[in-house]
Length: 131
Image (cartoon, rainbow, N blue to C red; front, top):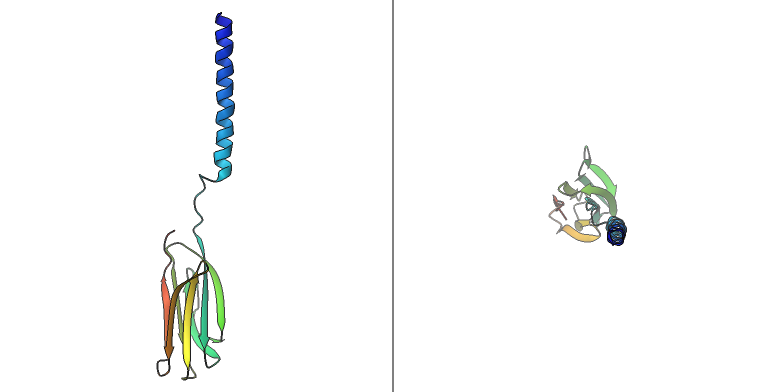
């Protein structure tokens, strides 16, 4: 009788171990324990009626060292981490028409600014929020 009980106990332990391993594999494969990715995609854009603009930008550790003259429409994308600063300024050297800056965060409009002459510059920026 003792041998039957011992065999039942061993079989129960074995079944529980197999179930435990299977559950662990399932949980690990499902990604429950993975940390969320802090990477974000930022897309900066400038449009200007005059065909070009003077810009500066910062996106985390990527930035302009001095002002850049670019043809418009101008677009540039960066990957940035949560909590990093993102700024874009643009000036209209033609002194006519409209100038617009916008920043999309993870494919959604995040910041935008637009002015008409006689105002000649726009600025967009902020700190990327934590997810």
